[in-house]
Image (cartoon, rainbow, N blue to C red):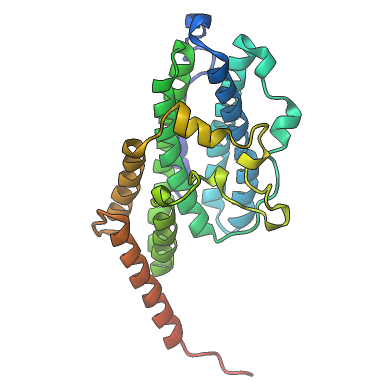
Length: 289
């Protein structure tokens, strides 16, 4: 089992919201309305760890190890929402999310293949780590800069934990895992070719609720994410390249094969899919009794 070791590792570096955030350093002159609004949107977005956890537990009923790890991931992600809300409660109480606004992002996600979802969230943690690092640079108020730096480090650790479960999946599932990871990897490393930000909170996850079936679409300002990325924290091609490089680097280590470009990863995806199809075709069908 991976859960006991991961619990110890994450417990050892866990930060305290009262003592590790320098609340007394707040400088009101360095926080404007535009910045404060983005903090509110991020606080609500982080709250969506709640439906994501419900999804993970539902789709991984046969994996008690991973499901137990969700207790740690869920706690830390909800803590992210809480510390952002605490910041607003202290310094901009009129912008603190209401319970109704938080509950709006709790909706059911359609069932999806567990291996693809695992890879999707691994990439999401990498991307969010870089978004928060950039947010920490964009903000000028010292307390929120520390908060975003703190959250970024958490997201990096969560990505590392997901990677451990991906390694385990390769041993257990072989080409099935390789196909799932490379398929989602190609998607999540191709953000430059898409009109929207590629993150789990920005993907459609419930066909019956379409088009309001993304977390971002259910926020008070559904358009905030693109503005935050493009105009505010200016998550430009240099930063996007860092995300792609991290995804490709980790998949190279995971698959024991070098992927320097998305195109190389896509060729590997096609090879793996072909190998799976060939194996399926070679498997004799059971005789009718």
